[in-house]
Picture 1 (spheres, rainbow, N blue to C red):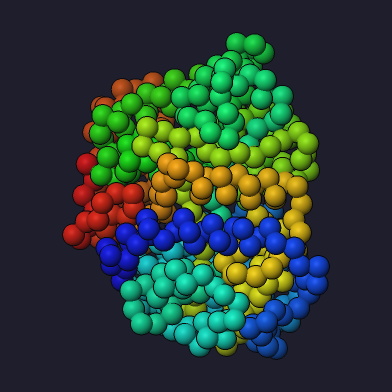
Picture 2 (tube, rainbow, N blue to C red):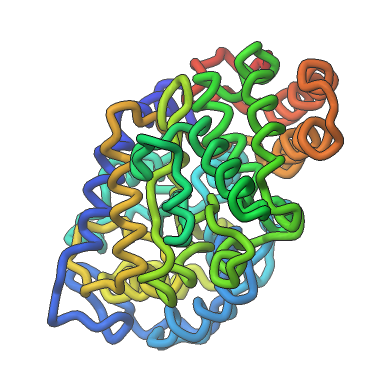
Length: 450
């Protein structure tokens, strides 16, 4: 099970680790063609027959189609890729383990999800696969995290992403006086939205606040740490109240259709929204199809810094795997330079290997530049995905969505609503036993929300 010491190594190591890998995506390699073969240090073998891969990543239908039709196109075996939301994903893995057998051969998930599976003894040792892939230069920090505090390689890093801002170029003339789009504050974002509304009569800021949107990650990785320096241990703090008041004020300039948006690329392309925040994979289509009209830029800073959330996904083989050797073959394929390049191009998830990759399009280059600016910022503040919540992950995110509903959409008093939701947040930690994760300070046992 992940230890507190391991948790807090993220704060020191992650900026350097992500930076090196993002920069690798910019390097040209004229001899590589995405998905057309195996890279040095990896062997896809004979494909290993039929493989069912279940993943909490690449869940939207469009991403699943890209996974099946492009990323997996040159794998020699037969793969059924199934993307599931966090709750059903966790339930499927647990149910197969309880039954002692099942159809799932390979798991794709987040570091925090694997922490729970590892603690329950659900993962096979993949040290042999890690040795096979040694020449690819998989980031050592991520490999260490994949051991989950043990001497075994319980998952192999697969891909990584984060969240950035995007804007249509016509919005730039409404920036606050003296503001730099590459070095904004969240307060300046509000002023930007107000300027647009005052001059055009339209509310053009946008957030993915729909049922399929990732707005909960905005609170967990961006607004909370940027305003309070923490997340769970600052949940009801005066700084948190200030943050919610800021968001409520800002929402006056947010397109009201945001409560229906799952991906921000579509409203950016249509012009319904001029300025937006979202996951890199959910902005890439707009940036690639309209590179002269839509730009990417780093997230703004708050009083405590430029908070951002790295997203690291991995690959694991359950102890009840229906085809463990085929699953290992598929891991080798997904980690090959060609497939990492195909993943980057298809779904805008960045590589976890140090390898030359093909030239990228202008939209993807724009995302790379925005990510680099976030990582290089003097006030950069990494805020990590939830760790160790297991089947409580959905309940955890729902707490933040409920506060958003009560404060921003219903106009409630943030201090009151936060105090009402605090027991629900603590119940998640008591049920899961999850410790605090950065940027919150380490905890002895279950995190104590405050």
